[in-house]
Image 1: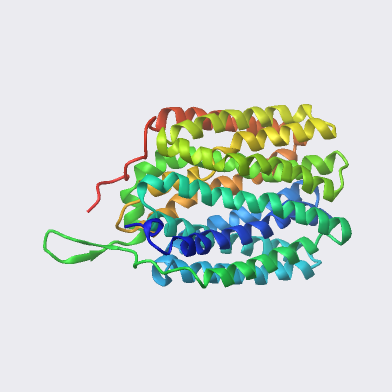
Image 2: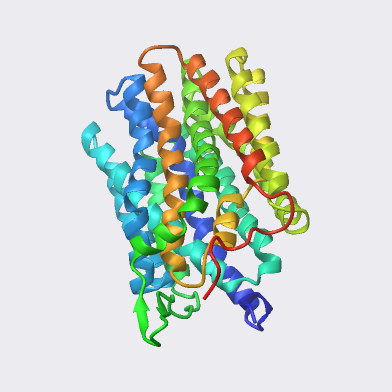
Length: 404
């Protein structure tokens, strides 16, 4: 019986989603300010985009170690540690005035985010019955997006009254509160990492062995998910930079960013319902092509209302796909070595998260920001075509290899 079907459902929902809501509230206030704070510390446009990309780089570096951490210490303790580390890092970001040190803190923030994301995905994969999986995962994504709407609004108010670095202080407080809520999460059974061989003896499955067994899933759908993560991450970077380039204040930039995230909040549960009832295909493919169109339209938006319109379009396009990455990963994950598989799965998403701002940084070294937007549109179209050929049209995806 899944935890959702047990008498302590309300406690589970609060404990499972509460840390995500609190942490994402803080992230929502801080993330749009990373590139702008880097510029305040003396970075050029391309360097500011690179500093923003370090969040994704940190996640990528820590993805595989996160699987080991979750397997060894359990999901709840891993979440708690990640929240505490993040609170310290974001608190330090409030004080630093050196660009290189700020960049290091952004990188560590990404590392702790990898542990947090892996542990929460594994937790829900085990805790929630399959028939509710997409709705549970999309609700997780939706809760994260609620925080990303409320966070920028709070960030806009704070940065209008105080300095930009106060957004990082807010994020530190939210991470600390998330750690407190995590203490009330029920523990899960230990992860299974052994199989019984033909000789009747249990054999341990190493991380590398588990990843190799599932290589086909990683090469096919993993690469497709990489492109989706890329354009999602690029939206978070290019919108603040586009607003800054056109002379908007930091508070206005935060409000535009929030306007882009608002449709995500309205559409996450319908998206999960579509995935559970019709299949994962029917949110991934429309999302990819619609977001690509938004990036292609961005160079035409040069005043407040058109920029808001494109930002909202990107939010609507992405809204129904909340939780698709973790849902597909949960579908494909095996019983044996689930945490290790999901850590490998997250590598592809976090490569995309790192490459999104990285593409902007690279292109803007040689061309205007508008060319970077066009490049992202082309990448999104290519990813959408890959989903058309790789994603089954109906239902949940089967595990990538037969279960023991």
